[in-house]
Length: 461
Image (tube, rainbow, N blue to C red):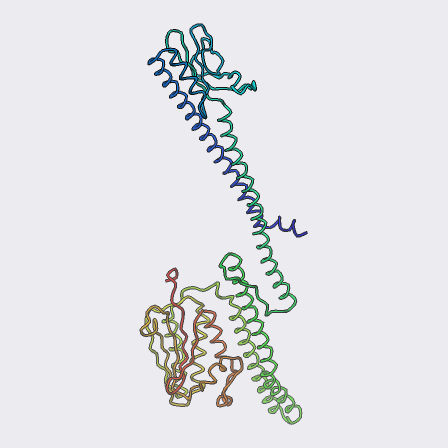
């Protein structure tokens, strides 16, 4: 079962396709090389024969027929010699092994006669026959065997090369497919483990930076996100179970007291009004929890657009300035003009409103609250905008600053004030959705809550 599965892998098919294309290219290249080499060998043989004919003509002109015959016989006995013919005026052979050519001249395809070793073997010869005058003809030839041997050697080498290429390519493709399948199986095993409930499992990353590594890294980020959402869901469930028990108990107690002690219509009306207020607060808490869950799911990110943060901050400050004045606090703004970010305007408005409400709720009378917006941190023009709300109230102890971002967490000194402990949790969720960094710091005195947005992308400016 393993081999058929291996053959069906995309990597093996890709390797096979590449091997097929490479082999076809090699065959075409080999054919071109073979024909080119064949033409070169043929040209060299012709040039050698022509040079030898010219040399024998010189011998004839210098010493006549006897010298020509002697030269042909001497050269025929040399190592790697060509085949020769000296044909007399009567058409008979005077020297050499090539059969008489008669009246034929030029390039000929001839049979050589019996060789000196007496075996009677015949060979095909390509010869050039040239008249020298007086009816004498000289012919010089080279047997086809030598050229054929060279061509066969080239073909054998080429065949071995193609065979080795196919074998190595097929073996390499199978090996690469095996490695690919092995890594895919590892991803499959992790997926099966996660299906079985082991959410801590992660896809192994080899660190090679290849396609499967990038896929594994993406899957691991997705799994981390799922694990974080599952943990958030578990935390919300625990928070609801523990922190909503008190208001539900209070609601039940009000109704129980009304049933046991109310003696008039007015008593019942007061009990019902109190129960309605408790129920409304509970509904508000549930709505906030749902809003946080919706933000943490990240669905709104697809609808992000350019939001004028300066205008948004001015609107929130204008809305809360009268409220702050009525509650005995001063709300001021220092807003840089023309600042914008990529995001969700409604969520950003709610985030800033929550920060302002949080400052109004947890500062004493006479406190000063400031809404600050800078295009970038001082001395760091490459960074993104920073939105902050700063007060001179009691602040938050350093050890509690991480905890106040949790759902339903409230400081001891804040338990007498209104609120559900979800305001900063929503702020943290909105900041994370926008890729911003939320920071709680000492304002000396008081608390400074800042949201540092990422630098704008060149494509969104």
